[in-house]
Image (cartoon, rainbow over all chains, first blue to last red; front, top):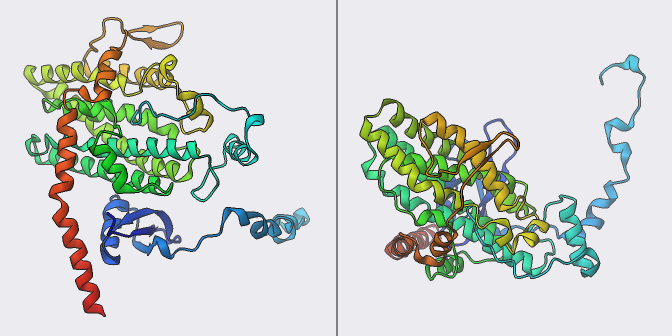
Length: 93
Length: 328
C-alpha cells in the first residue's frame, strides 16, 4: 500500500449535521478514495455525503499548545447564557 | 477475545512516584478517563503494545472471514447467502477500521500485514478451527461473535481514542452478526430434520471449548494483564469476561434445546453464576503457537490473496496515473 496515500474520511448523516470525521482509507487517488470510503463507512445508510482529504494536507493544533490556545476562553463565563441570572417572571429565554 | 496474550514489554508496574514527569502526566490522564490521542505524548511501551493489540485484533477480523467464506457458495438459500456475504463484508470493514486506528500510532499497514504472513503477529486462536457443516455458520455467529462482543463492548471505553472510536463502530455492527447466527441455529432446531438438529449439536460440540478459549489464559497465567489494565487498554480480566460470556450464553443454549460438551457445567444458586469444567490449555497454546487444525491453511490463504491481488492494486495505480495525465 506504499503507493496508496492515506485519506481522512468525513461523513454527513442525513439529519443535516456537519460532516464528521469517521476514519481513514488508503486509495490510489481521490475518486477511488471516495469509493473505498463508501464501502467502508456507509454500509448502513450512515451518510448522504462524503468528504475525503489527503491526510498529509491536514494541519492540526499541537497538544503542547493546548493551554495557550484554549485557556483564554476558560475565564470568560459571561460568554455563556447561564451567566445571566434573570427573574423567574421572565420565563424561558 | 480477539487479542490474546498481548506482550506489554514491561515486567513490573511502576507507581506514579517512579515515573518521569511526562509519564506521570500520561498515567494521570488515563486514571481520569481522558482519552489519549495520536499526537499526545505516550510511553514507547504503550505505543508498541497498542500496535500489537490493535493489529492482532485487525488480523483476527481479516482471517475471520476465511472460515465463513468456506460456506458462501454452499449457503442453503439465496437469503442466507446474502446475509453471510454482508457479515463477511462487515468483518473486512472491522479489520480496516482497526488498521486505520493502528496507523494513527505511526505503524505501517503493509509492515504489520507482513508480520501476520510470516508468523510474527498473531490472530485469535478461534479462526484456526475448520467450519465443517452449515450449522457452523450459525455457531460462529452466535458463539464466536458473541464472545467477541463481550470482549469488545468494554473496549469502547479503552484509553486510546482512535481505538475506542473504532470499537464503537464495530460493536454497532456485531449484534447483527450474533443474531443472524443464533437464528440460523434456531431455525434448524425448530424446523429441521433429525439430521439437521444433530448437525447443530455437533457444531456446538466442536466450537464450545474453542469459544471459551477466546478470552485467553486464566488470570494467574496472564502476566501482561496488570500493565494493560493500568493503561486501560484492557478493562476486565480474562476470567471475568469468560464468566460473563458463559452466564449469558448458557440460557441461550438451553433455549436452542442443545447441550454443552461439558459434564461439569452447572448453575451455582449461591453465586448466581455458571460453573464449568477445566479448559484444555495445552490445546489453546498449541493453536496459538501455530499448530491448530487450520493455521497453515489460513496464512496460506491470506498470502495468496495478497499475491493474487497484486495486479488489482497495480491497475488502480496505473488508472490513477492515467486519469491524472488526462486532467493535466
